[in-house]
Length: 451
View (cartoon, rainbow, N blue to C red):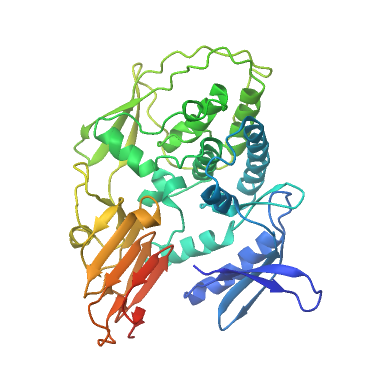
């Protein structure tokens, strides 16, 4: 929660970036200082340097190295296929190697630093053409601590690149960053936003094929061996992914040096069976289809765990299939298709427990959303494609102590401008966090805060 500003160090005359951290928990102020000192000690070519920190009435700030230029998300918005030509594919794979080395560096710190929001918008190129990972570490770690202290869910992530366990709120570790980086690389290499982990899970639970198309079938310039590595890194089950960034880096290096023997590799699909008596969805991976193995320069890949976790690994005792238990709650899905249990956001809120996450699929929802309990509402797709639309009424009314709305377009039209209390977002009470929301209204006021 906060923003990033370009600023000038008046003592040195240098341009810096100020990252604002807004935390309302007094007990976390020392945690901020502790983690600021931790980040200031990091030194890696793919990470910006943190040089200082300070606090004032506007919040707490990190002073960081300023990286000029557009982020890769902006480049993709301007030209979706910017990185799909053959020479660009090779460049992206070089960036992947550098970024995986940076993640290995972060994940093996004590304590480990988990990014939790890797996406094209958090990647920039230096004037020398070096890739840099932005917005790492502190904000997500401090806010996660705040969430566990307050019982509120305020975890920063972007749905298109977030792993299933992060959307569910069941906990993240180094393998969560591996998924997000792989999803980001997939987008760069194919020019196509990957199917979200939630969309994929819903499809599999409905007995449909995984909608994530292998990268080499979307862009033939991507080596099939690279596509296999990305597919493993983007496994929805956390136990199916590479156990460390170092392991994925080794696999990617081997895949890049491989002699391609078959461009039509088949990546295993998945099927689903209904919920069991414990309320868990049992996803069964079908036996792997044998893939012609390319000749590689380094056939042996050492996989070393970077983070100790108590999460149980998938049951591999079965000879026919490996079974992964995936908790269903607390995510509620809203959509305008038959697969979605709820067809309005209001209906999902009415059935949500405090702290639940409500994921909204693309569509136009003509309703006034009343937040009367602590929930997080997240758009599953582009903000412009997920619209809450109202006429002569507010799109969003806050009636709880706390709430988060992320990635929605709120469109409110009024027939008369005489009512000065009419607004697209009405906050008579509580604290509402709006992230990546577009607000369009013909009223005089976009957001009305009464409290």
